[in-house]
Length: 225
Image 1 (spheres, rainbow, N blue to C red):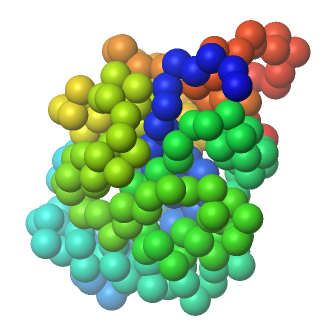
Image 2 (cartoon, one colour):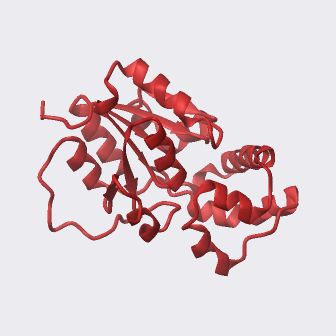
């Protein structure tokens, strides 16, 4: 077994493992009409991808309680069209490589466990030791602690991997290391401005960091979808 920098990796799902942002863009204005909040115009998307959660809420002009209703509706709509959501290229192989080297894997997400398992497929889903699903915008810390307790590792042996600024903030509040992926919901430049995190431009870089592997300098600059 290879040397490891981390013994547990806690993944976000949407935008990190699964390419759900296009579905989000196709769906969000249906939800805007349903819940009476301002629709998102195409020219607003890039600016919003640089915001944290509280900035997004202020921009959308809605209270936290309504955010939770919208999130649940989004999850239900995704379940109806689950075949539209695919994993990013290389994700199954990366999960298999980490698991084969003894790294414990967890997913903490506001999405449902059913949706996540269906998108992962049975082989990849079986690699995940802990699912903390249905988490609210502000409820991830509790799920992080449960994943760590179940895995029996130390806090300094944990890496959280996600794609949003709010994920970074929650990990820092829990004193956990964080790695941001460059292919998710948040613009790369907004992630690059965040201090004291790893930034993964390709899926392979996650395993390289966790397993202390030598980087392959011939890799493409960004992850392919």
